[in-house]
Image 1 (tube, rainbow, N blue to C red):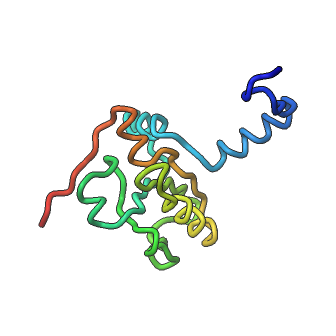
Image 2 (cartoon, rainbow, N blue to C red):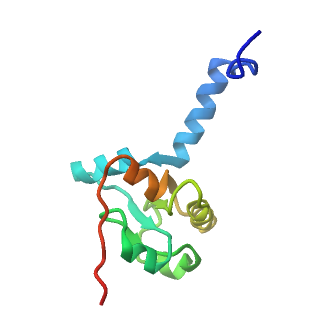
Image 3 (cartoon, rainbow, N blue to C red):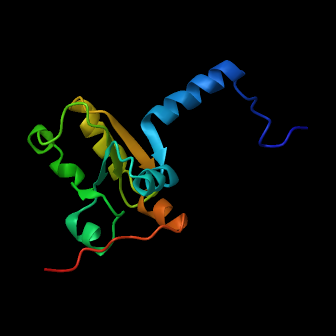
Length: 134
């Protein structure tokens, strides 16, 4: 009798490769974002899509605050159309990043979601930046 892990068979290797390639095309992880900043090879714009109060309490260093409800063509006009955006929200319990990614894609912008969000960032042991109150 197979385990619960193997009772549903795996995909054939070629199908699995295609599936994981598609996932990698629209996701990135916290460690890769961190490493890009460490290496100074930041060829994307990192957006914290939570509200401004949450951003002020703690965000990924280098991230810009752009709440998902404020994503529109006028706000994106500051960046060339080829700019890759990476979005994150609070964590796996939040779908704000998915909604923001949808909004960006609908506007024709290249986008990836940083899986794990802020929770994943902290789980990796990476520090947050804090915006002091005005």
